Image 1 (cartoon, rainbow, N blue to C red):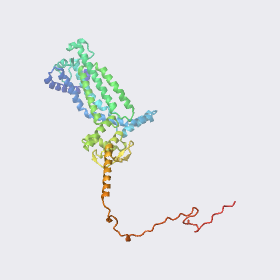
Image 2 (image 1 turned 60 degrees about the horizontal axis):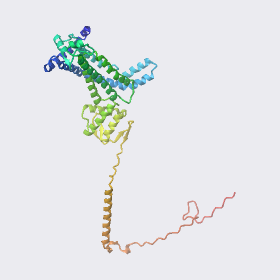
Image 3 (image 1 turned 180 degrees about the horizontal axis):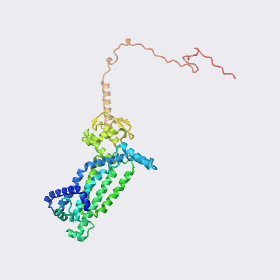
Image 4 (image 1 turned 135 degrees about the vertical axis):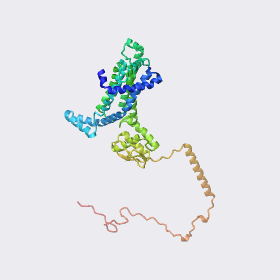
Length: 432
């Protein structure tokens, strides 16, 4: 163990220095030998390391998204060349080269984080075993070993015997209850983090082996944490619980604000974005503009949720532009499920249905008006002025036309073209 510590001293020394600085701050508030001072120092160190590793986490998310996008093509290659492993590997490398994706890029951020986490674990394990490491001297080591977190010493384990626990100034029941609760919380946070990744942030339209692997890890990781947790000191359990809670919160933020295309999280995000954009009639942040810009750039390759978002903006009289902004427009074209634009025909406004009382009152009012008009016409005297002012002599005399009798059924009034005028002689029957 000393050899490993000497090899990684360039990391363990800075980590131990940071944890001592946090302890000096919290020690002035809670006391130097309290579990709050050392426990909060461990939590603060984990948070500081995770903040510094956020850029690597972003790269990991982008690499994972790129690998998820290539999963359908990779599956086709595996099925096409399932009997030729060499050709399969060549086609895979060709696909990676054309798309600019590296399969190891999703693992490199995890590998970059491992030295920092190993250094922190080694410092805490040194405190548990009673060996100085880094800048932690004998006095700080004695103070850390006296610290208790909810009655459990920082250096105690679930598997320790009663004699060792009593030497640290605690009871076996307190140690096992505290460590059991922390192990359960640690496994539960790991399970929930993986579950929300599988149920909310995975493209449901594509079924790939990658999804099956993630589903298997969702159950394997919590079991591994539970098995290894009984051999971890309380200080290390504080470290693992803190980093799991941080990962869970970080994952929740990513799923809410930058979901995977085609996932349930994207449907929920676009629904919220539709309400905000239609209410304010603009995109309010850089992230919203980036999402709208990416959806517009896809064109006919949009998925179901993205087409629904564009159609909702169109019905609200808004147009999503190529730069990610939203402006008012007269466009009435909406997209069908296959991405084909169609013209939206506005619905004709139907007249409002009247009640029975309204119809009866309208009918009674019309009857009263007609009665009044009839009475006015009866009271008005008829004079010669009401007749036409033209003299009768000026009017042309028209003779009554007598109806002309219809011709007989066998003849017509006019001769058809190609026939002689006058009565026609009947044709004689043909002689056979």
